[in-house]
Image (cartoon, rainbow, N blue to C red):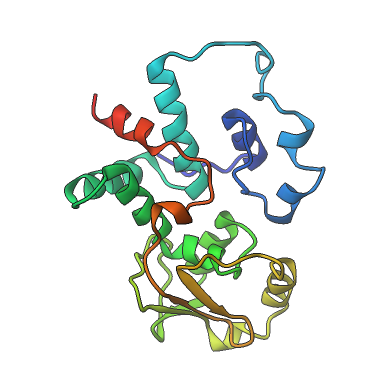
Length: 208
């Protein structure tokens, strides 16, 4: 399955809420969800009651699209979460938050998760001093994520830091904007997830 390359604003409209895939635009009146708060397409404004399965599927699709993950990857993460001790849904969210592209986004080193994924793929970051260009790389507590030396003075990162200046870094991360380095203090817990997610619906879907 190929990665989606169409308008990301259509994704937010389809899920009925902001998934913050467009960076700064999501915080302005130009946001497609604010202007047209209904699903795209000619039947988008029609009222349709979802079945139990439909509700569960939409929740899974929302989370998958928010983190930019393909279906096979998402199922793999669910299987990992199910094998771990603890609550499966919470384990799943911790795994998703631990992806390198998400951590880069949370640190304010990218304006959106899609941009973070692209920057990681282009090898702009190191983890514990070693170059990593895999967006799905799983960080661990104590890992140090930094912008590579040759990228720090680029106009791109100057623009990113200016755009994310007011962004609040979650408590499970520590960020030094002067050195463009961040540290994973601890893995994310359920209360650290800022997206409105009902993970029990995803667990119910995969448990069928």
